[in-house]
Length: 197
Image (cartoon, rainbow, N blue to C red; front, side, top):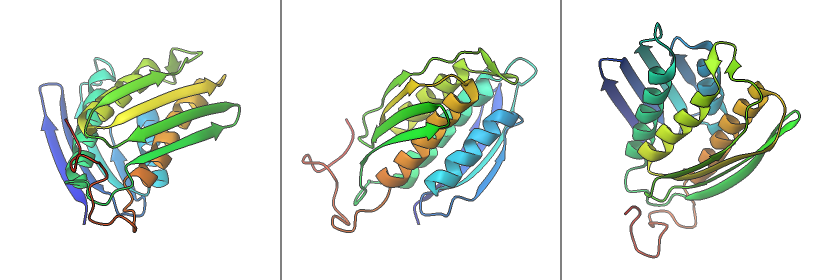
């Protein structure tokens, strides 16, 4: 079973994240941030990764620390669950529509963390959630998961739809990239014989 649990506690947040890469998309999410919970729930559902997130943070200040630290912990959990990455598909890309919005998400589980994020949000907030935190979460996730991740919203007018298409696009790309390739089971998908560095 490709599973992992990460516990991260600072003066700002107390977070526990568990993943099962070979799950069915079961989600148990509680961050105290309604919109963020919604994004993580659909991330689990569409990636088919079982995901449990319990986060307590300094929400009386703002949502930044809780959002970013959850991305850190989830990235670390995915990286740990992947192990030596033998047999994974590694690469995946998807165009994700959400009504008037279209976002392209491409991932390489390379062990070399990098994020390109291009999305313009018409509004600064979705409910009480700052739209700038979408990029912060993706940055934290990509760096700590050790993945190269390109996210670009090609067009869209609704901030909720833009954010949702980013998370759903990541979900579907992850679903493919972490899957075991039956033609290459046990092989490291790299001519170097290892991933990372």
